[in-house]
Image (cartoon, rainbow, N blue to C red):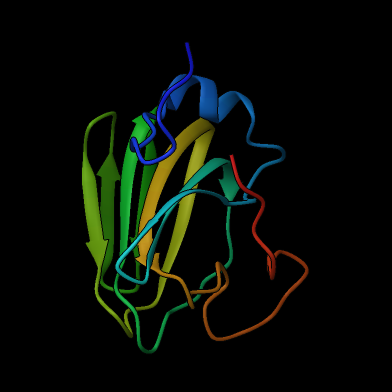
Length: 126
């Protein structure tokens, strides 16, 4: 028996993270109201950046990470989230592999206002 086509899907996060290829490469898990739900596996230190027009939500699903700000640091573990306000420069860091869920406008680039070798222009889907 197959599900009716108009029945919303249920996403198993563990299975979805197993399909996320590469570190620091967000994958789209869903969309709502012009926002994207993104999954990423991270490890190491990302680039300092900011998003001039978008807030960004980080939710740790597995592992630990820290968000470094010019004014200080926020440590996050499983089940914890932090919302980075638009315009605030930040740098995500994870000492070991960490799985995060990001919630942000569809227009948000992972590297903010600059394009670098780590910029992901077209996001894969899980």
